[in-house]
Image 1: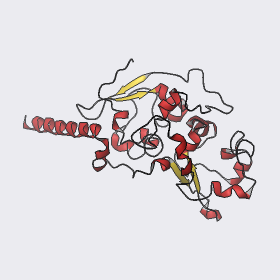
Image 2: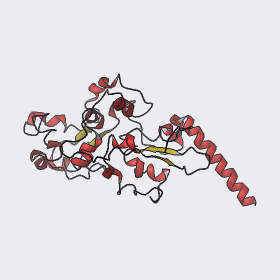
Image 3: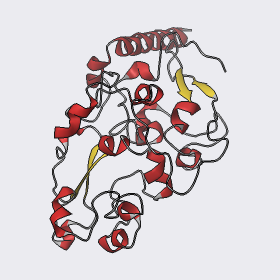
Image 4: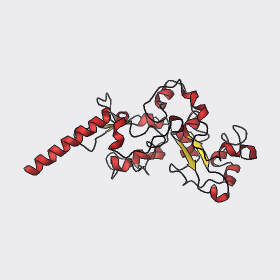
Length: 263
């Protein structure tokens, strides 16, 4: 009996702490181990250095938000076969010049945007500067605001037609890509609001294959080890929602207090 009471009190304390974190996510850094926050113009910028320095050139800077203005995530991470994890895609200069990866037709092919044949363009990518392109951040000033990351609510920007990113180059999405099922994912601790997952919001940016089956099983509640601790180690939702999409310390974006949903 005493053991049950102790456990109940422990769960109550945990629930109270988590609710405080939902109310004041900026204070949650001391509780969860979030990645260090970058300046808004640098959130989502990555350094690609798989073989650059080995070949005597500067690492590549890639800005997700600059590219997001023109393309959805699906274009690069499905059609062009870029892995989510940085420095794991076997990009080479020869492959780019042959029309793969960044050099594919409709991208950096020398016609749509600058290509790979003019050495004057090299430092536009090979600059090892995460802040490169920050001068364009002012382009986002009229977009709906968010509290974390780029400080932009990209979903609202898309819904309001402020951006119209291309969703494919040659491979059209499946006809059922607009699958709109909303899932309520129960939290680990008693008393914590369920996480709300909208398929529609994600298929507007991604392909179903980006998540299923490698990151999540298709059948609900069958994905093993799905927990906040694993997410914060860049697994599951953390593949995107740590350094690129809105970050995990924006707690209420996933755990709203009073979700008004229709299953």
